[in-house]
Amino acid sequence: MKADKYYEEAYRLHCTYPVADSHYDLPVELMYRRNMGEKKIIKTEYLPVWKRAGINFLILSVFVENEYVPELSLKVALKQIGAVKREIEESEGEVVLITNKDSLHHVTVNKDKVGVLLFLEGLECLTGDLELPELFYDLGVRGAALCWSRRNPFATGSATASSTLQQEGKITDKGWDVISQMKKMGMFLDVSHLNDDGINELLDSDVFNTSFFPVATHSNARAIYHSYRNLTDKQLVNIGKLRGYVGLNSNIYLVGAKGWEKLYLHLEYMLFMVGKRNIGMGMDLYDNCNRYMRNVARLKKEDVIAGHDKWLEWTAFLLRKGMEKDVVTGIMGRNLIETLSVMLA
Image (cartoon, rainbow, N blue to C red; front, side, top):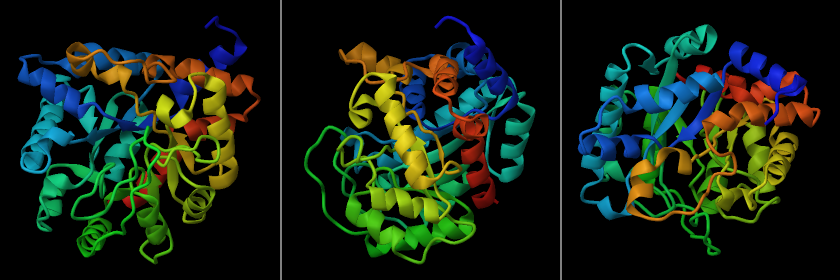
């Protein structure tokens, strides 16, 4: 993109304000590549991109693939957490693990380091054991989704992004027990992959309060594109009323088209339904962090925003659309930071 006044303003904003991605599937990639002997992957490959884009906070998703569920779920999750921690050690102080509001505040205000927060995208790794959430908390995990797009002992997931069939099933007793534990420990609850029955049950409950909000780390608007992974109008409105957060997803299967105009329609609609202080970026970049997967299979391009290095251009695009600076900086990261700052201890 040719530099103009909007790009220059975007650059200034990225240098000044928090830039945060609420969903990045990097841990599984790190696990595979470290298993093959690679080291310093974040420092040499990802950190330079994050620095150029002004990114200083990312939520990293620990996701266990279907082939490891259920028997190897715990082992694979622990290996991914271990891979992230080794990469942080090898970053020589440039990347830090975020475990509380003080460390979050430091990286987003000073912008001298990149902070990463660990969360579990599905609780198969608990193997149904309700004593394990505390163990994962001790390892630095600060958020979780009850399930990915599949059924487990805690809840039923939504259909996968490309499916036309909704999965039915409510949150189980074990699911509610885990939610209670998470609330007490100061972990956020992600609803992005929960099915409609589960999300509606949650939003109609009294579990949320002034320090525990519903979070959808990477979801879009179903009214703009009909995918069961996207949120309904009622769900969006209720998340806004409960002071929650929704991260705009850049995956083509949730956007519904490759162009930025369709992604902007989702954003514009969600700003109206949820509120301008409750929306951020949960890009869910796939092409950008799956070198291992791309090497073992031919995969078509899935990211509408083609990588973190395009984020500056996306911000310039929003400014060019006439979006107010205060709204843009909220979407860039401030809204996510403010939401987590209340929930983290």
